[in-house]
Figure 1: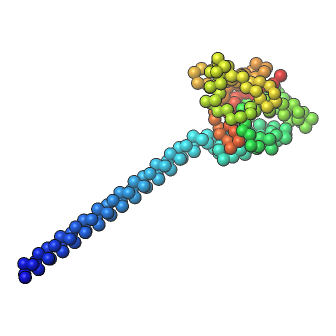
Figure 2: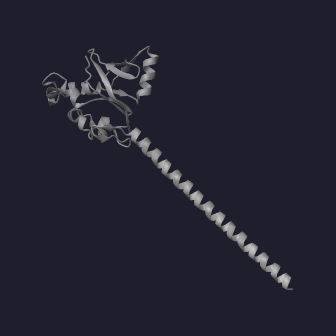
Figure 3: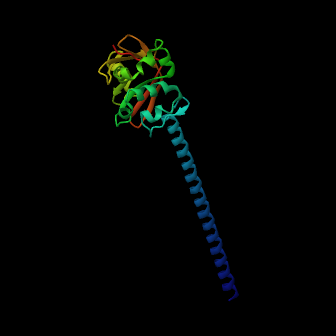
Length: 215
């Protein structure tokens, strides 16, 4: 009887130890899963942040958000105040806030400063709105043409891609070195692209260092 009682106690003790071990294993497994999940969230957050930084380059000291349209982003750039003023004077704000998509080659303030003295002020006069519209729409191509698309078009064109602008004129995109793309306008002027692929909700902006001029 005593032996039986002793064996029963041993079985109960062994069972209790097994239960405790199982509980510890389950707790360890839960902690491990929680750790892995947290690590996954952190990594996903880091990847998302990196993608966001890549998609939203800084232009004129401000991030260009893909959730905003061309005009909404342009007004944030300290380097494009002249362009924004010109777009407003030309009555093109609503058009460039439209669905698009558009590819805009956006001259900086320095690019406008490179024009002959008085040229910008003359274009901004109300009586010259039509001419201003012609210059500005010469910087816009229908469709979303990022760096890869331009590179592909240049290759297909044997080294030169011919781009039709919204004012009906033409631009020519070509290589300047192994990676850099430049644009030639109808007057023979060359403009370099300083910032590629500034993605917008209604297209893409490429920042350029000279104003493009149609004939």
